[in-house]
Amino acid sequence: MLTLIRQELYKQIHGKFYMGWGIIVLAISLLSGYFYHNSAATSAINSSARMFGNGLSMTLVAMIVFASSLLTSDFSNNTIKYLFARQFSRGQILISKLIMAVLMFLYLVVIAFISTGIGNILFNENRKLQWNDMFSYLGGMAFYLFLMVSIVLLISNIFKSNAVAIAFGLVFYFVANIMNVFLGILMDKLELVKYNPLNFLNIMRQFSIPEYKQITQLSLTQMEIGTIIWGVIFLLITYLVYNHRNV
Image (tube, rainbow, N blue to C red; front, side, top):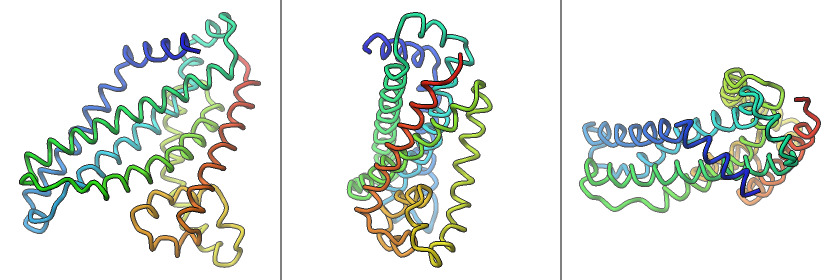
């Protein structure tokens, strides 16, 4: 297992994904701080949480791109045969990739915190960081990504091309938001619809806006439990599909 994790780390370090997206998260956070500072309407407002939230938004996009290519990269680069030849089980390979996804998320979150701190000093007149709001964003994002990444990993099992998998993952991200609007209408007519996995993707909004429970029709605790349950279900299905996937 440690060998697999080291190999994944090696691939990511040489792939420069972490560097490119780290720079983007840093740039977006600092740019948002600059524009909030120079806007007459927002210059007097403590914008640290907004800077952090914008940095996390780019982290979200980065993680969807990362998860979409996580399983397909080995098939696309034809390195999957090498992994199987070394007698690693597919379960071990999948777990090593999940660990890498967690490490990538933690890395980008650290970048978001650092860039928010820098932006707060440069553009926010050294106001105190809004830790409560920042951790609220982070908590909602962590639950959201656990479910979203699980779904994206399952979908990406269909493809062998990195580009197609990434494109489909991003399309699903936007389509899921649109579908939630129509599902909200159905929930008013059929109560069971509120337990569908797409409704639990609203957890990020409900973390920041408690009143959002009127739309999801579930408490925050129910959303957290449901998100974990659905995430585990999708990961188990991902394993079953990956375990029977032809090389």
